[in-house]
Length: 216
Image (spheres, rainbow, N blue to C red):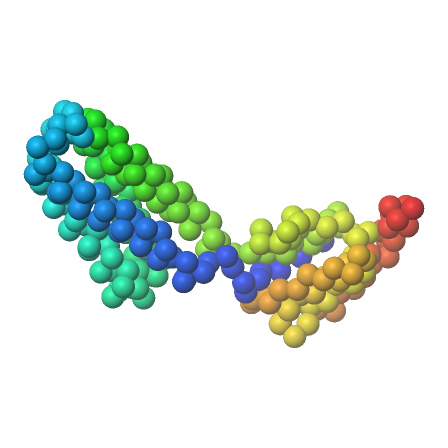
């Protein structure tokens, strides 16, 4: 018998969404300002060794994009926190960053290349990670073990470690023999509580001898 209890909690924190967008905006804005400033300098060839695009154009482009990102972060924050919108903006960051780093790399301006590379990689990782944090979390219980959600410190518990499991009042509670307590809010519970708790009690009693052996 296997019980899979879906939790109401997840790893998605909307207020954390905009932090990397802000960093991206400020980074590209800074590159744009510096590029525009250097574009009029006599010693620009010491920075752009092999320019393939006008530094003036690059500077204006980065300034406009950086400012646009910051405007969206400050004035369209709720829109940005919508997962589909956030995903699309991440993809735009990645595309722009890769184009910029390619141009800067060919022009041999390594500082700007490095910054754009970091921005691109950070947004790639965020795009991947943000898909994971929206996945549903479960506590899975069978005769062999208790699998905990990804947000827990441990990934699983053995039955001999558990004193009691309760499924009541919209929560699942796992009371461990080491006085450690796991508790989560549950979602869409269709599990028969009496059957579930009886099963858990039977498994705890069945594995009690293992507890005594491990305590020894």
